[in-house]
Image (cartoon, rainbow, N blue to C red):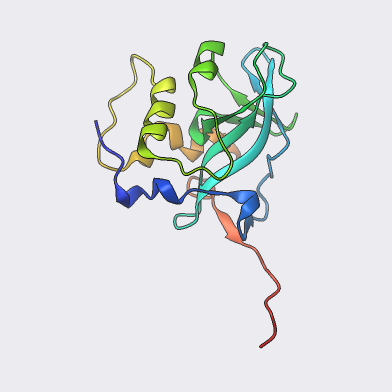
Length: 173
């Protein structure tokens, strides 16, 4: 099994809302969208996106489980971007084949707390399927759970799940 090492910068993930970045033009801002399972049950809504500012890639959706249809307690959890799919017609994010047991096994997200290698491994292991190919290579984010084409589907080409630097006012010198 590959390890998460310093090259992956897992400790450098940032909340999109607390950064100077924004969603790239032409891409949907999914914050506030409902998150549903394959049966269309509401699991919660997208509260935040965690991304790596160096690669400009979204790694996790932070799901707020408030007001869900499946009896989950309120809290926030991590969903790897490649586990979810967009339903732009309904402004929903779908997590196909997710079970309540999987959701309950995910660690809770705490705003501002650094995400360590053990937490990311725990998240990945929740979604590993028995027939899934082994994780090869040394890059943790090469795993299928972070495959942006699974999230964006046919909507766009791979590699475009980036966030762009926002145009901020700079102080006059």
